[in-house]
Image 1 (cartoon, rainbow, N blue to C red):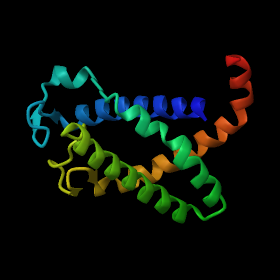
Image 2: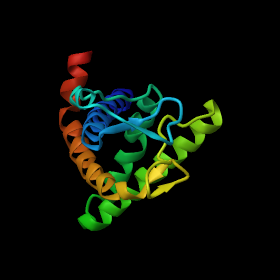
Image 3: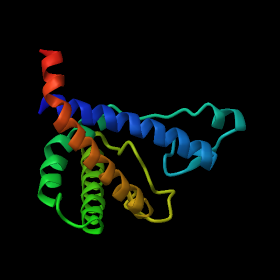
Image 4: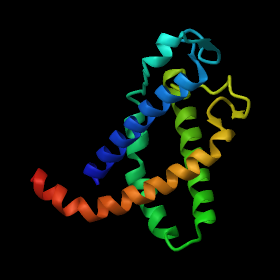
Amino acid sequence: MGLRFLLYGLLGWCAEIVWTALYEALAGSRPDEEDPSRRRPLSRRARLRLTGRTYLWMLPIYGSAAVLFEPAHEAVRAWPWPLRGLVWMVAIFAVEYAAGWLLRRLVGRCPWDYHSARWHVHGLIRLDYAPIWMAFGFFLERVHDVLCQIEPALRAALA
């Protein structure tokens, strides 16, 4: 489980870095460092740098997919894709909201702040990300299946 926790954590970090770099390049703005609820415009040169970022806190959050996602995937594997997509969307929203709320309580601030988005809930989730989370859930289904296939070889290589 530790190896899968680390793999999901690293995958999440990579996905977030790519997402933030592409999103900010296309949007032409990024959250203001002093007030994350506001966005500041980026110059053309800054947009082309494709600078993505994540937070150290995200590794255990993404890594939790090994504990939370894999059993859920096994339970809903045979369900029709629209229902599975709904499960992934709701589950990811729930984890994102809970993690953001907990981080606000522990450190005084959530690393992400969606207050500048139109369809946010308490600045912790964006409802307009629903299709993205559905698609990401389907992507994680494939990741889980591949990990199940290659785990024996990974364990042998790391032993």
